[in-house]
Image (tube, rainbow, N blue to C red; front, side, top):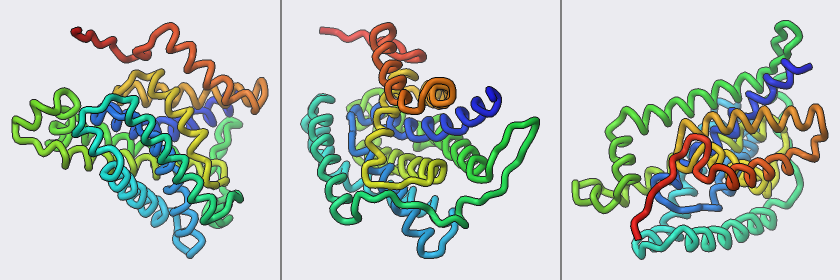
Length: 292
């Protein structure tokens, strides 16, 4: 049924948008392509799994996973990317450094915990559902939508209406000028890494809740979707990431429902290539003129 598929697509897209928000914030402010972002997503899912296995509910697992992923993001940024920013290295340097780091982190996690898929306890998922005109929405889906809306709204408020958001926007525009105006750019970079990591970790929990499948390499597939959403919405554009995430979720669900589930990744990649061919700045991004 099309209405059910559209609802499922919007709920899935809300999680994609949440994941991509942190990625686009990190790129828009710090100007780094941080591939370890996918590991933060995986780490958040595993923290939630450990908390729920220990008897904690989602009310504890979600913030614990988000905070743990945020701390990991700050540590990784300090170890790998701070020196590159000081040396004014370009995006390719950060791409190569974080590519090696994320492969090592995935391998270490798989060696430590094993590659098997983990499942959240049945009591965490909830079996009750709301049905309206033939459209069925489960408790887990409502939680996913509610958490995504709250976290995305909190990020928009932080960036647009707070003093910290003003500092973040200043650093994104011109870090040198922001430093001359008294803004601690190193502190802002650490805070951006923390916020981005918390969003990735929360996204890992919600995707783990949606599919009930948690494994060490789950962040790899999400990074492809993250690239699609960020490029489709426009690099560094928060509103664009929200819209593009919802759009990708709907497209994937319709592809799986009416074509074949195995084509979802192919469709995501095709969208990525098509947007790069036709509108490299994204649907909501604007081309940047550079002086030479």
